[in-house]
Length: 147
Image (tube, rainbow, N blue to C red; front, side, top):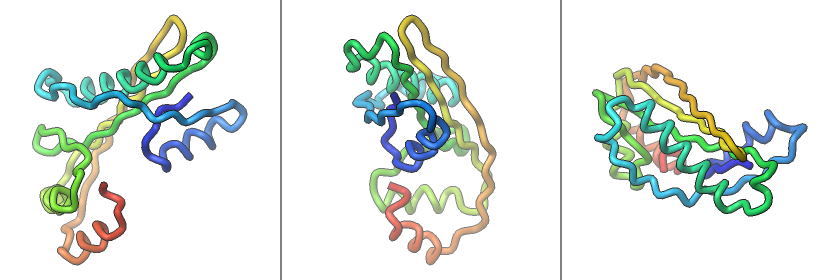
């Protein structure tokens, strides 16, 4: 079982596990964890990924006996501040402008939940953006990708 909102992420996992039955189930986990309670961003993404996986696992009924649920979460960290999904074009433009010409870190948390167990992990990737012109930002925003 995979709890995924992003189709691209779901496709990657489905291709990686092509010898196993995969069902994609969006999580209803409320992403309202207090970021200030997590001094390290990787702890926040691990906890959010675990919350997503546990929420889906809790809805599986009898399938909990054999299913492995994979949950994931990704955030961008700039100047020790967690930036999440922008939600609007205006916020996306603001975020892209702040990332322009700078380095930031992308943290992805991964959680596996199964009957009687759970594991969490994370990966951190340092990303460097070239300076972004307003035209490049406009083009990216028109793709719908940042939302």
